[in-house]
Length: 504
Ligand SMILES: [Zn+2]
Image (cartoon, rainbow, N blue to C red; front, side):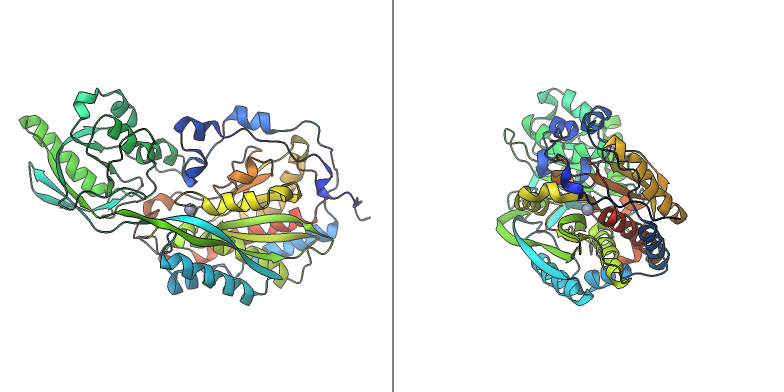
């Protein structure tokens, strides 16, 4: 069989400056680019349709037989064992928690740079990023009436603290953000709002978006109505684990800032029962809150970048990455130690297999995703002039489980090529999704500038049990699953680096 024709047109020959409409979802919630991971699921169909260009050229044979054979060999090699688990094991053991601006954050940057060098990347460098620095301090939450109980809780990221003596208040409960919105100010003023909404378990994590708005926006909604504080039921799918889930609260500029706290799910149940009892007796429920959470001066962090240099088009890059920061409560194993491990292992796996990619494969370990996407925004800003040479970008940020689906966001004419990628992934148990991939939070700024993005969707059934909690530890990462995911990322990165593709 003759080798398929390889045309010499580099991938960037087409127009690239096609802007993407800012996600309607983000705009609606007023979260903008400062709010990352949470609302990145499921772009609207209209947005997806508007994003598909119609003037891209068709390329019929994107890969040589040798490229495809190499992809299959990579897949079959890496699924049997990769660098991924050792990476996340060592990152969580030797660094652990690494929230933006903390000592752990700085340690993680140094650790990751040294690890990428030790793994043999052709070029390793950092990109300085200014990040916000918040410290959760100590927190005490207890019911004072009708029954005295201490509750397990965690301050939401970015929350202000209380006065030193703490605050006391009567509780008013709402079972949705809409109910809180609809409540008259007089029902909320001077009280502590209890936002009691549960999260649905789902393989794709579809339960997250509906409830995370409460975490992000609840404080400002309640504050605008005169509430003293807000306590929410943790955004998580664990029904019976006694730890709280943190995550960012987003204060609106035009509303008073009030302390925002999440209760563990069993403690939210407890407060809910006390509330029912008190309501039946027509008595108030009273809470006490004391928090020393505070904002510190801005700090320095960095994106850590490792490259396998392309041997034909070195200035054309395939980006794969994850975010190096984590929340402070756990070890950052599933969020996002596993993701940075998968991206790193996939790229270095290509080099270790003796392959020389035509284009540069760049691993970006983004700084501070959790508390404002600082690293992602900085990367996009610095690379603004080069984004036309970004072939595509993909982020691993959904834990340490297996990939089950591949989706793309490319020109309609390139979808058959993406389905060909999926056919190489199929033996890993990965199905074709659609051409409406939303990408990851950190690839959002690239996506909005027209860079094609992809999702190698991981099974999220258990992800939100431990997400943003003290229970985000290495034992939640399945070594075989991260090898499977690494194999999938490597196949995608390799095929993007090799193909004669016109993706936009
Ligand atoms: Zn994450």
